[in-house]
Image (cartoon, rainbow, N blue to C red; front, side, top):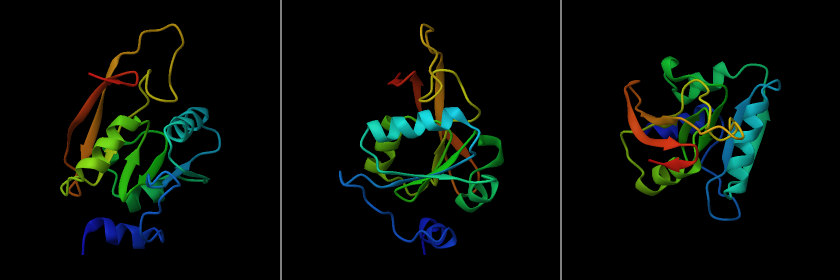
Length: 153
C-alpha cells in the first residue's frame, strides 16, 4: 500500500476529490488568527482549485498525520492530490508535482513565512528569491523549485 493511501485513510479523507476544473481539491488546515493563510487560499482559488478551508484549534495533529518534517513547518497545512502541502506553496510548484507525480515525494513546503510568497506579498517591494522544498516519507528534503514572488527562477 502506498504511503498516500495510508495517509488518506488516517485523515479520513479517502481518495483525492476533484474540483470542477479537474484539479484536485485542496484541503487546508489553519488557525483562525492567521491572515496570511487566507491569502494563500485566495491564490489557490484564483488558480482554479476548489478549496476546503478548515479553521482548526491546532494544526499540529494534521501536520503529523501528513508526515510534514518538523524542520519545514510554516503557518498552515494542506493536502492536494494526495500530497502534503506546508506553508505558502505557489501553484506552479503544485502543478508540476501533480504533473510529474514523483513517487519519492510526499509533499511540498515553503518553511517559515518568507516575504513574496502567495499571501505574503509586500506591495512596492521586490520579492526575494525563496525555495519550495520537496520532502520524502523519511523526512529528507531537496529544493523542488525556486521562485521570486510567483515567478519560477
